[in-house]
Length: 326
Ligand SMILES: NC(=O)c1ccc[n+]([C@@H]2O[C@H](COP(=O)([O-])OP(=O)(O)OC[C@H]3O[C@@H](n4cnc5c(N)ncnc54)[C@H](OP(=O)(O)O)[C@@H]3O)[C@@H](O)[C@H]2O)c1
View 1 (cartoon, rainbow, N blue to C red):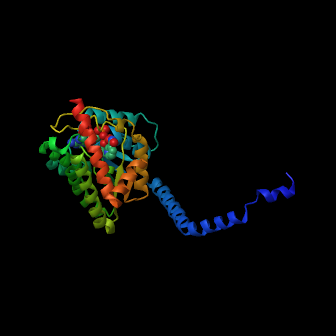
View 2 (tube, protein in one colour; view 1 turned 135 degrees about the vertical axis):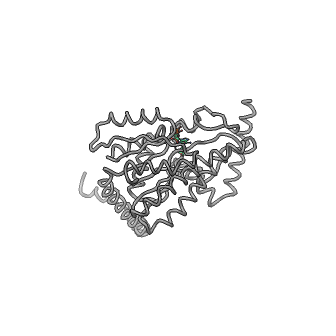
View 3 (cartoon, rainbow, N blue to C red; view 1 turned 30 degrees about the vertical axis):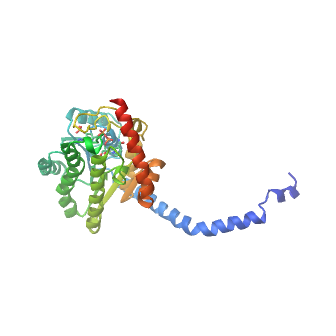
């Protein structure tokens, strides 16, 4: 290339003006965002070094996201307490963890817990505190879903979903909170759902329980902000777990099918890593989902009429499909 050809490669003056305008307009937004992201990363790195030895109580640790969370926190050197109803599954998760080559490694503790047995939760917490004296991080993850429209859902099913998903987590949080407040230290994490941000047809009970969880988390966060107790609410989109297999039908039977949306959902390991980052960064409220769920979220809040119209179409389509199947 000759020296005189270099001029041809140089940006024209029109482009220079455009770059200058874009740079001037975007810099005040981009620069603070870049600084905030950098501070988040520095903080996350600092707290990651403090993770080894922290006591992490995970509910619903016998499968799906809870199992992945157990792996992520165990590999980070935490003392994990695995809680759920199915003891053999919890033992399986524990043995999988013990087989990992991790340094430092603390043997996981298995503890049976039925979130529906609200009266048993204070005793459960006494046993937990008897083992480790404290819980640094509580992850309210255990939950169930439902697949039925409102008209065909028995009230007992609405109550069950609400008790397991909402009141169970509330009871556990309340039983642990005094010890966290007394130590002026702790992190409470709620695994909600994008359905805690907007509701879709045939998920009324599930969505209502997650909306309640979101509201509880928001109130609690404000109340304990000056007590050095952090609260995070995490709203994932579809995750590839057994949630639909374990879901209830309107009559309370086991739904027992793997939904296509769930099967195509994000990997639970990836979400578990994001949950860890959220806790390290002390993020109060995050949505972890694909673009479609994020658009639905913004539509629900900024263009509700359009959102309701789309959901009515979806409900009609589901009703038609149900009629065809029966
Ligand atoms: N999968 C998704 O698409 C998705 C999307 C958004 C949010 N989430 C949320 O993620 C969380 C974990 O669900 P997952 O997707 O991992 O489903 P999963 O594989 O079915 O796991 C659910 C866990 O909750 C436990 N659980 C259910 N009922 C319980 C009870 N009465 N007492 C104690 N534990 C109970 C189960 O253990 P036992 O049966 O052994 O008790 C199991 O470990 C749930 O809160 C769910 O709402 C899931």
